[in-house]
Image 1: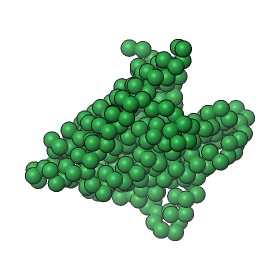
Image 2: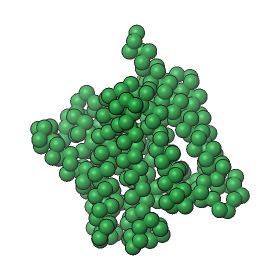
Image 3: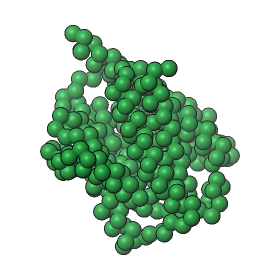
Image 4: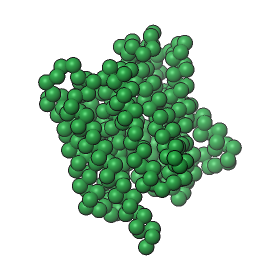
Length: 305
């Protein structure tokens, strides 16, 4: 197995660890994995995550003497604002949807990245890509309707409103990813990453001060630390993966996260997904993966011309 595949698998596992502990902290006493856990508001979880990321980024910026506020400030701010909003919505879906469903819906972000890029940078999209996008959207529609299609009362509830919030999160992530592309030739990657906590920290801190704050106790401090550190690990290894190998080779392994999420949700949270829900997840993954592979093959053809 080549390095790129190993890196992307490590990244996927790290992201799943983050999602697991976010769900545990957000669920609080209602989950059965760790006893005595308090229920944390989503903004506070993001606050701790942002503080840890911000401190790591500041240390790197100081050592490498990188301009703190960057060059392309307009797009850096857009990246920070849309990225913060998208992550907040995603964390809410983690708390209110089965883990596999929330994770899979978030994988729609590359599709929205492509659609938005057609307006921002006039990116050309192949007809076969539009076909796979339609397959993914069919999966979303079926996922939203799965609550009404299944008569089995033992399966986990998939509320279409939370699915819609997850889709909106993916749309905003698409905007944030396009903003990152706009900054790739002007700003250091660490500066781009740093703009997320730079925007998120004061907003989430204001929520903690004026609305609600839960003081961590005991093992909860460790969980908060794990969320921050593993987020950084996931981002680093994802970057290393796409820098070390062909994108078409790496991409399929990126979506293993849905498999991790399905089994973690089933065995740790007792989340049973209906036949319609599983079918929807498969359709979404086929659509997202097909679009990514054909997009990458088009780029490879253009580079070889």
